[in-house]
Length: 243
Ligand code: BJW
Image (tube, rainbow, N blue to C red; front, side, top):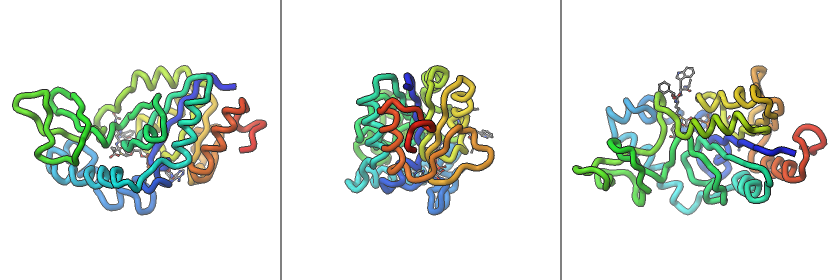
């Protein structure tokens, strides 16, 4: 029976909701240069190009066609019914975990629904897409809000809480992430080091350097509900479980 679970999610968990991943075939990085849209230098060079990139994703998220899938819903059920502690750390900037009902959630790469004052770092909920009219109310003169996202070379959010959770968890699950972006890619090492069981759910089979003790190959929307039922039944993953 697990006591403290940490779940790390990546773009793959939202793929079945219709949001594109980054590095899969047809992923966002096929159409956009990382250094143009996901670095502070790119934003300094051309803020409007970066705003267009995030605005098109903001519009898709608010189009009414994107809803949480079975994997998001299963994690919310886990939070509601698990008697131990659960923390979801998401690299995703969408709000599908919240819409599914998850509350103990940390957005380590920021949130698409927020803008941030570049001077005070105060965040504001975005009612409209980015543009010259989207300014802070904390400074005089008002500052143009930047996307509240973590770009390459910037420090991810909530790292102290994340390290505390990883040091103390007995089960670490990574869902739908390619494990190419640090520091998130190193969380499995930290969890292994502290004696946790480590499990990966991914559409792709693991490579030989896989650091996870168990790998479940398939779609998150199919596997995560089964994984959650196994945990809630008090079973240990990989032994008596049917997974
Ligand atoms: C399914 C599925 C289905 C599909 N079911 N599965 C050299 C060595 C080591 C590190 C570095 C280095 N040089 C630089 C670094 C650090 C750098 C880094 O890691 N670079 C690497 C590329 C090498 N990291 C950083 O800069 C980070 N900050 C940092 O390290 O701070 C410390 C520091 C600061 C200052 C000075 C010094 C140190 C910041 C990283 C920021 C990442 N930002 C982005 C974009 C912003 C948000 C946004 O626009 O949405 O975050 S990049 C992008 O990648 C996004 C994602 O959150 C992130 C991870 O992607 P993810 O989620 O894994 O998606 P994919 O597409 O890669 O994978 C999807 C997976 O799902 C695949 O595996 C599929 O198979 C699977 N899948 N459908 C199950 N249905």
